Image (cartoon, rainbow, N blue to C red; front, side, top):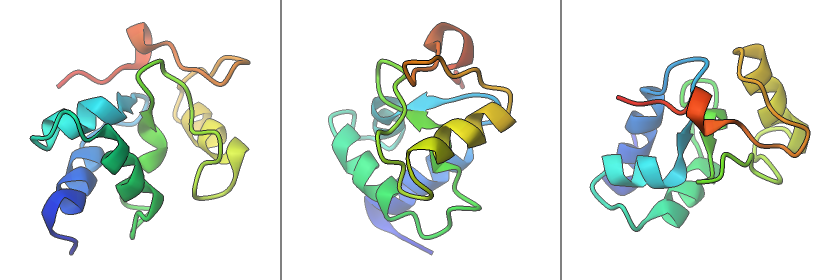
Length: 103
């Protein structure tokens, strides 16, 4: 099991329910470091359990998908989200007013 900040990130991301998304900043805040959204991105890029830690459910503060999703290329994040019922716009954004996870 991963410890430290990365471990906190993975545990927080596991809590995002299917059909919802969270932002990098939201995950950083949940982990006690609201200014560490870029570090959240780094943690997700090296996700040790892609099938267990649903990193595809994390988007930027504008709802934008990752330009080069780490686990399968640029279309993989879109496909995974759409499979869960999240509508992704043509410009690769998600409507946060609809799909943002709120604890």
